[in-house]
Amino acid sequence: MAATMLVTGGTGTIGSTLLNILSLRGAPVRALVRSPAGAEKVRSAGAEPALGDFAQPDTLAAALSGIERAFLLSSPAEDQVALQTAFIAAASRAGVRYVVKLSVIGAADDADMRLGRWHREIERHLEDSGMAWTHLRPHSFMQNRLALAPVIARQGLLIAPAGEGAAPLVDTRDVAAVAAEILLGDDHQGAAYDVTGPEALTHARMAEELSLVLGRPVQYVNAPPEAARDAMIGMGLPPWLADDLIVINRQIADGKGGPVSDVVPRLTGHPGTTWAAFVADHADVFREASR
Image 1 (cartoon, rainbow, N blue to C red):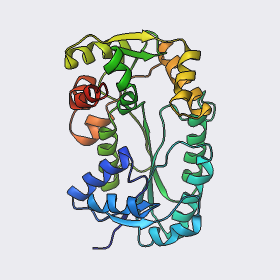
Image 2 (cartoon, rainbow, N blue to C red):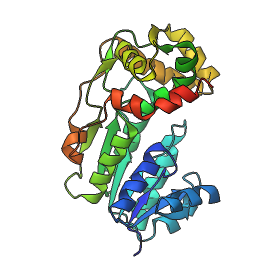
Image 3 (cartoon, rainbow, N blue to C red):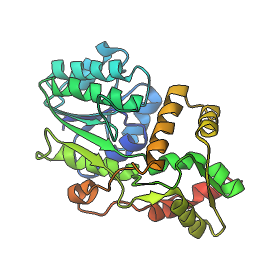
């Protein structure tokens, strides 16, 4: 059966999970990849690979041929407005009827975060494209905390500049599950969904859950924003992205972490993943980081 859905970002955390869900549901799906290695990865997930690159719009026509629905996701980048709008234009030319876009919580023209402003600009391009659309605006990902695993494992510290504020972090597996339901359904066109976890937790509470699962104390340290920014850049993040993450953490510290939404249970029929469940699922990551 010819593929009628195209997933971009199919080798990433959300995209690879989405491909697995769609394949298990029997949906004919194609995944855009930039390399033969990526092609092999998506093929193993049951998807048909198609070589193409947002930065080279002329490579997208073949990947979009025969596609009715597309999932739009690309990694954070300073040129992501140009990249994603190029994809939107190519999808429109190819006759795609419906695009589900992964955006970000708080996307708005006047957002404090660059990513929030950039995603809203892309959203508007999609809304004006003539294609049907749905925007998914997930909160910060639980998976992002895995980058802190070495310090958690070796020093017993969860370090973040988030103060005592709480936020409903979301598991990327739940984001993918929501995306699958939308791509497979017909009731979500023209909607924008905030996608969160099932509970708003402080980082102190997250540290408590880590302590319980790992069987040793983990303490939350509220880091000064400047030191946290320097540490992020030292980990390889570009300065603009580190700045955005500091903004997110400042909002959380100021009590603006956002409300819990019911999108995950309402659209998927199952409760969202709790932080405790996430930590239990990834306990080996935190333990292996100390070896």
